Image (cartoon, rainbow, N blue to C red; front, side, top):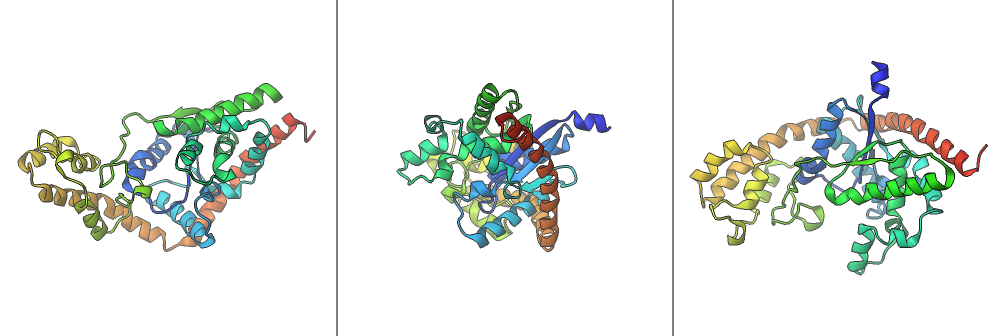
Length: 326
């Protein structure tokens, strides 16, 4: 049994604590994390990327609360801290130390190819060093744990490519030290539309919160766009239907939508019932977990102990490779 555990591939993923998750976060990533953990095929490390979030959140109380909330969110959706290592990025000093080492071999033109940097430039934003250096810290996050796979969406594949490139460059200069991680792109994970038809995103203010109360669900669903451009030739409102498919099989939806063509309020009312039926047990479990904040803090501390052991072992290997320790 122990031998099989040691042979498991290492899976790692980090999430920024930037506010309440929505159903797009859940169906696009969070659910997959729990499914991958429960598959038994991976030794899973999930971290709260609070240093990455510092580029966006610069209020101590907000950061503390968001970090705690994210830990509660993950437990509420079924992530078992006895099976996975759940920890805060900031509790593992090796992340920033390795990033500093990588800074000496990564060039500025290379970092200027990053999507986040180019997007900020296109929007004429004043770019801080944290945003510019984001791919280097992310590479350190990934490579510290001898990670085999990183579950990402197609639009995030570049993050893993940066980690691979930096690992290869380090290995070519200082000798074989880092394993090359692979992106794990889950097939069939669709982009969840927001209530305005664009990708569901907090930045667009078009979300349905994952742990929403019923009145929040009602308000959000009734706000889903159903104008003529959103309705297909069969009279089905695309945004409503695409979201509905997340909560009920298409085989069960066909009769409902055939019977109620053009009756958008009726279809939205049905969607409200199905979303609330799905969210209610998650919402109740989350409320129960939130009563014991001390337990959440202890879970993160326990995760940090295991993560530190693995990360520091790799950092010692790196320091030997570059010659700063014997």
